[in-house]
Image 1 (cartoon, rainbow, N blue to C red):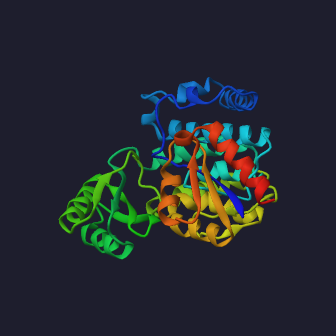
Image 2 (image 1 turned 45 degrees about the horizontal axis):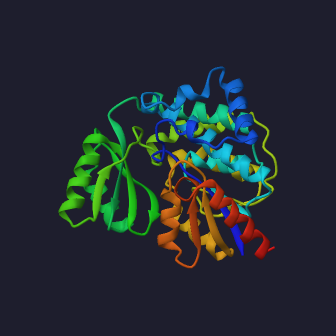
Image 3 (image 1 turned 45 degrees about the vertical axis):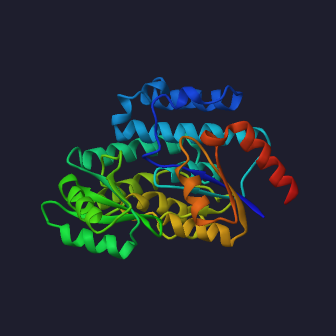
Length: 311
């Protein structure tokens, strides 16, 4: 029986999330390193006002997740697999030792900057539940125009599909989805059209910059966003980090493949509990927790007990 750590992406952020991290030497070490890399206080990036910026969101997500990861490691708990959703993939790459935290922080900042520069306004993402991927794709195609493009994006669950594109087209798809009986259809708190071909140029630029960084052999498998396969080589992890921003995240398939490889305990790093909730729904035979919802202490106790029972 295996343990997987999950790392959330954009949309899970909340104001002052870094101030809510537990007092622990490992947390302080991560915060200090982040401030040295960024050249300013990391707390400047997680205020309510700062989080209107994609750059600030992605920096804060990485710092928050890696800080708790390092606490688990300091307490003797390491996962068998790691998986990160979108921007969370950079935290997963740090967790499997494919990339160092400082390099990941520089790259996630660049990722956010490239995304904002590509689409500074008028674009975003939405989510539709209660409909399958093909139905949502047909709705998106019916609303697509060259002026206002829209695409299906992430497959978070068989009946939870995200869409990306212009706000005008997103609202049209959402309206039609509601009329066709969608359980929910709404805009997400994301102001960039991620995970579709609109961000191909961002992927190319990111790949060029990632190629300048030293990647190492992952010490544990990393679940790829784009392919939903367990990746074990530095080149494959690098490629996934570059391409996931312009391709759908196959999250449901990732959860399934981890379960097929005997994962029975999923723990989501902060902030939020979106990924743990998806795992609970998709994998009723496994146990899914989040540090935010269940508390770090409880997650640590359960992880240690699980590891000792299944070692």
